[in-house]
Length: 132
Image (cartoon, rainbow, N blue to C red; front, side, top):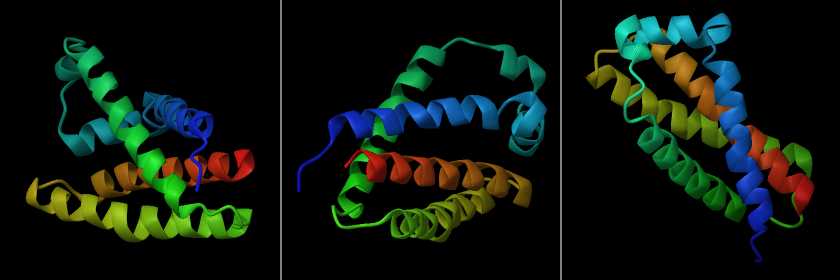
């Protein structure tokens, strides 16, 4: 299997575009901030953001790369989306949920973050499928 590096990079970048929309205060940003227990002061503190975004990019790139192994050359769009939903909802969101319980975070925190991660995985899967 040959990796389409451009598709992996585009999939990674697409999750950042989604994140800017998803976590916008007019979408889920305020609800996420409340669910995460982050104050306005903490939100406005931009120190360390380069490290956060850089690390997020690397981790998301690895996620997109790993997902590329599940999107086979003979996979159609519906199976790619279905598998992305299985991974996003059935594995990633459940793992986030377990962690959130120990972090004493509520259901909204799990739904907002799990929804974002699931949507990201679906978008990456669509890009990988279209570009293969």
